[in-house]
Image 1 (cartoon, protein in one colour):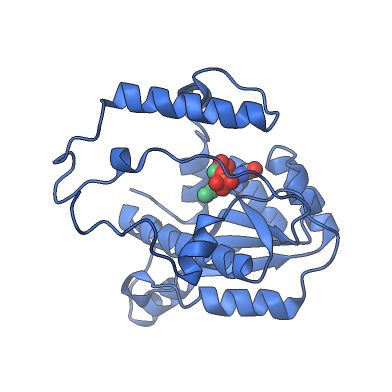
Image 2 (image 1 turned 180 degrees about the vertical axis):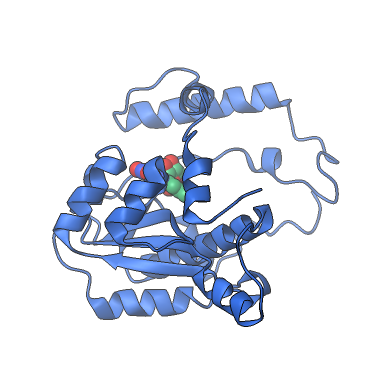
Length: 259
Ligand SMILES: Cc1cc2nc3c(=O)[nH]c(=O)nc-3n(C[C@H](O)[C@H](O)[C@H](O)COP(=O)(O)O)c2cc1C
């Protein structure tokens, strides 16, 4: 084994926090104090930012009516309607637009890089916020289903042009201790020096068959219906036909060209 691989027994508070992380979808009704949200977000804004563009904004939503309007867009996810607080992590080009206009340029006809960089920035802040929240004992789940209808979500959250919600985060005090989902085999996803330079044991078919079986066992043990080929089956069901076909056009209408 290459000596760059961390010893599995190596521990730190952050590694321990990540090692027990799980998505939580049931919350006690207790509120999440604003001071906590502020501490979480201030810490998360220390995330690195590509070229320091900080092209994100966060909408903190507690209003039950707003959440009741968001939930149907996300496919009626109960935890969206019931979350004590919902953080909408948005890619935001308005400040970079200001900077460019100040210098006689424009973000009109921006490109794939602009869209990616702003979305990556928002995602890094969202993940850091999720971890910071976990460190305070809060639980939550990210909500990518806001992209089911980027236009409707923008309307509900009052997002101006050049801002779109990349994903949300339902946050609250956990009322559930879900069993962690197994992850894929480490050797199948980590490469040293060059992709595939070391042969992971078995080919992709056998490794994914093992993961299918693992995940099926996990779902059955936790009372969720599944098939024997759990993961490959779910992926096929989820992505064929392709998901969110209208997204590109909707983002273009919001001022993200992705071209
Ligand atoms: C960007 C992103 C979007 C997600 N969207 C949803 C969602 O809309 N609804 C949901 O219940 N879970 C959502 N999840 C949670 C994933 O389903 C979950 O992370 C995955 O199944 C692994 O489970 P775990 O987080 O408990 O380890 C999302 C996760 C990510 C990273």
